Length: 458
Image (cartoon, rainbow, N blue to C red):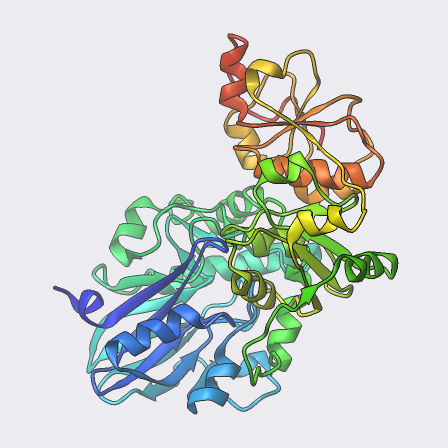
């Protein structure tokens, strides 16, 4: 077994597409890298190994989640390690390029790798003079690099050029050095997202198409051309992470709400989020509620589609884990959680309140309707129904050209149901949701999917 097998525990957040890391330092202490505010998996892994968290490193000011480093500092006394250029407003050890931290046998060396953010650091792990691996955060990632447009369009090219130089610096490391990125498959910080999560310097020299660019200008063009949209909440979290997320002194809970309390919340500007599966939402839901099924991607769509400034009430089912709602919300900065409807839709109806239904049909029953595809641009380009209208889910609140009587579709039905709920809130009462994806719809009609974006209207 190699070093990573023995000492390094990757902690993958499938919903955000990120990896945090727990490094066993061999003496009962551990280093964490890029831990999120949802520390449940990290604490469980540390407890299984009998480890105490001594260091909490952040590679950059994260845009897609709130850092757990401040919380770890509070709870375990961990020393927070981060870039001096980030000017964080809380206690931490501020590191400049080339500075080293003695981990007690192992050494962590800071390498300035701006591009994804201005203050980005990678952390090279050394055992004496032997270079074991590098935590690359949002710099070099598997077969790609992290996006450079999060600080605004006016800085995208400048940061892309910085990213080029950072990747050149990282790939000067020996071939055998392991690469442990934070962003990976499913992350909107990747440009474009990949599938593997870890790699080596040598493997990336041969496989990363961005590293194959013949010069800096080509690299910049390729990177920028790959950038898709990203969740709205990304624009807020970097500054919160710079100031430091609020320390939690108790487990946050989701109170039980009576039906009349939910009514009062909506009357006062709050939002109702229905976390039940798409089919249950379709069968009957609170008018005006937003469908965001509770799954790995819940936090992403909550943060993309709803404001963090209004109270939220949730509708779920008895067998759903309320703590999952809480932690997914908290890790993206949503703390105004009013509670969950006690008794669910049965209690809502028993109180004399109305419900709305949404048509949810399989491909064989979806004929004769305009087809609206709400997937991401890259998904649409990879294969879509001929003649489909493309309106990304994240931009639907501003969409005004949804065809009358449309069937709304995504890959399986969850995002399409979310889209239908948003359209219903804006006055579209005639939408139908496809229970399935484009391949199902095309097969039912003897069609082939087409590639490219020629049919897109987004």
